[in-house]
Length: 277
Image (cartoon, rainbow, N blue to C red; front, side, top):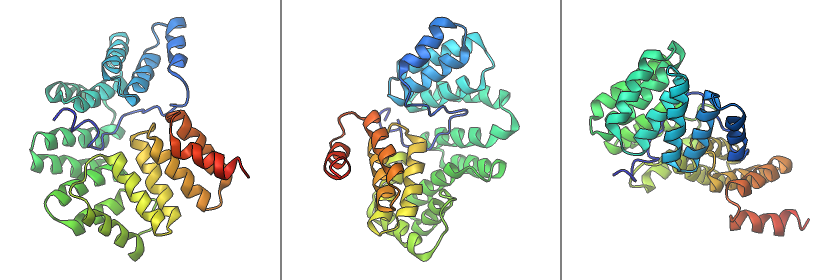
């Protein structure tokens, strides 16, 4: 169960730092020169978390909190980490702290995350209430729509799930084509689980139908959840390539290699298609 819930839900990390292209050494050097930099400890924790080094991430978040006890980002990140590790009681304790110190603008994100905890506990009605509340507090909270879609799908409501998936991609202009692709994709899977994988695979479906513009948006949504997802980076590059945006495509291919130096598909594409030209 602990392994199963690691990446299933669309948790939202407050002040998430996606500067993943910089090495861990970057933040470590800051800490050496400024050991009381709570933000450096928090960001180093994020880098460890991106790499699934959860124990190290937890240690850095706790160090940040020890330096600045009311640091919202570190408490939120630690709560999310506990959730990913299956430590639900600890996650709820941290979320309770986050609820008290968070500004109104972050209230929706917090309710979304608490909803994820309730869902894993099997309290589905309470989870749905939290997701709905999250959207009332922050209508732009797209990932809450994904979480609601997952609940609809689990109850056999394919149409409702499709509608929520479209809402989770606000940059996509709904039409019969992309709605049909989403519904077809949902009809082919047994469950909606890992959000990053879901949006990546949906992007592949869009691309397969020649809808590269929507594919790009799906791949970008996947990368919001998992910045080091090399396959999503590669697929994003391919979509840009097919759209004639060569420079952006090469940029994403190089990002793919940074995320996974051993990624065979991107190396082959660069060698046989781009560098050969």
